[in-house]
Image 1 (cartoon, rainbow, N blue to C red):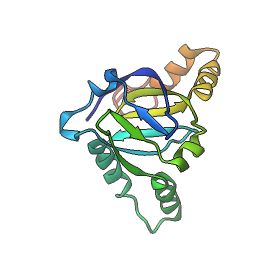
Image 2 (image 1 turned 135 degrees about the vertical axis):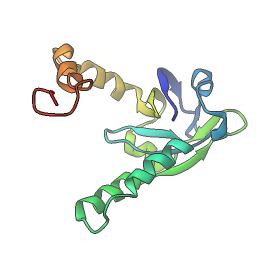
Image 3 (image 1 turned 45 degrees about the horizontal axis):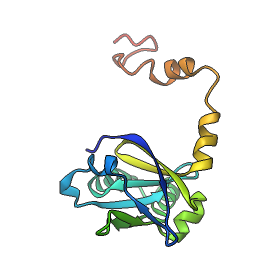
Length: 159
């Protein structure tokens, strides 16, 4: 599994191509052959997955029971817009127009790389997102991450 890290300012050219920053290219698994899948994010952004990570995530989604209506709805929304991309000879990927419109991506973008994905944000939307930082990030961290290292058991974390 890929483990990306970093934040990169980029620009789309007139044709909607994005130059993959060298700092990100160095983090790519050579086995992927610079092949990706791009999709809509949960927020108004795009998510770029290395092909092997997409296949793993896709396999998880495909395990959902399709006889359950909520699962079918999730599957449709999750796969909507998914497109395979490859870096061209100049290290660029062409972002599909429909996905650009969904995310409001026009010229200046931020690539936010973490874990197994790279989020593609319109620069202004990304900066707006960061200005909405919670008043007390420490409390949020405790709420979200506070029980990560505790053993499963009762409410107090004791088995």
